[in-house]
Length: 420
Ligand SMILES: [Zn+2]
Ligand SMILES: [Zn+2]
Image (cartoon, rainbow, N blue to C red; front, top):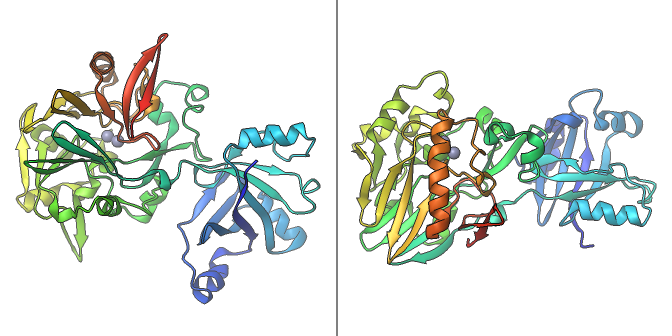
């Protein structure tokens, strides 16, 4: 078994007080706070090279940290070893008769899976085994040619949404094997805008969540933008000011939050020389939200664009630039659209929230967020059959692992042949 030191957990009475040493005196950087609700623990991770320190504070008397502090006082609580597959590691140890605290792994900080080995087996140290969540290291700008286009799957970091809401009517026992929920029932998702480079210029399709969310929203959505869209563009050597066209699939904040940025008190277009292509009816919906979609449309993401005079409103489906065509799907929201990219006899499709991840290939696996799920179903049924038959290269905007691939079907089962 390969195991590397992931972190050392330190039980403290008060994290803020402990930061006076770790952050202020040692000058270390501290990551955003995390909660493990099931354990009544608040944690702050302090990166120290390939491994880290984790400060742990109890949030209630039932917390194992509270019990530890009572018995032994503050100090080193556990040592965590990272393994590739925690299920396999537990099977292996069990076979050798090693005593375990956790027979089954459970959700840990940041979407990881963890299990404790009994201290009697590990000579007095509490050893935690951890299988990391799909990490930001999997988020890299990745290029592929398509006819005369160069397509680059970008990224704007990771975020988390409620697993139940992501799979609609599908029961958790079915979806949790495809997307492991954390202790707050959230699953890890990516944001992957697509860069199209053509002889007519550079287009970006959707632009991530951006950096305008407040602390409460960042916590609710578990945003991890340690590496974000600027890094991704940097990886391909393109500046935000070199984008000519921004195309919106729809104006939800996780797709279009990156359209504007704050400069002092003002909100300005993030892509300074770009034209922004937006469906006029989507603009209408986004600027007149109702109780059911209000949380998804944040006016700071799009209203400043109109004031800056950079929006080109589109009335209907059609070609927006040579080889780039939008098709309205409805379903997710009334004006949700996907983007067909066609060149040299090849077709790629940016499916946005129609097929947000590779776990959404089945017809009925439709997000609970969708305003018109029956419309999603009708479009999706038709589209996926067409995509399989015509071998469309599909870009999955929210998949944390697979950026693009071909949908295949064998023995009645659909799967994705990963390309990026
Ligand atoms: Zn959406
Ligand atoms: Zn989305």
